[in-house]
Image (cartoon, rainbow, N blue to C red; front, side, top):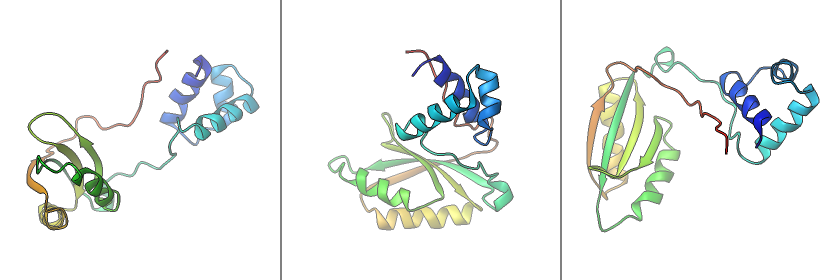
Length: 153
């Protein structure tokens, strides 16, 4: 990855619909060179997806919850099962295996507290090796983003 790739990544992370011609003008390459580089970045997995970022409140998912999950210390096989469960549950936006007081941290969207409670109950029922869920309700998101700074090697 060179400086041109980093510049292209910085642009498409902010607007993945931007035309190759406009990107080319900004980074100093031809449109065909930008298209080749974008294809290579996609093929190599550097660009994993190009998606629409939806306002959760606008579609009825008004609340965000940060949940800390504790699992049975003697059985970390639950991690793979839980990852598959989370993949099939769109309300779970992010799931991290972490160090500290909890084993996993999940970012969860829900319509309201009742919907979150129902999801939590299903999570505990379907994954009995989860010992406890500690929840924080997000009062106001101060920064939400997915931008990754393409650094020099």
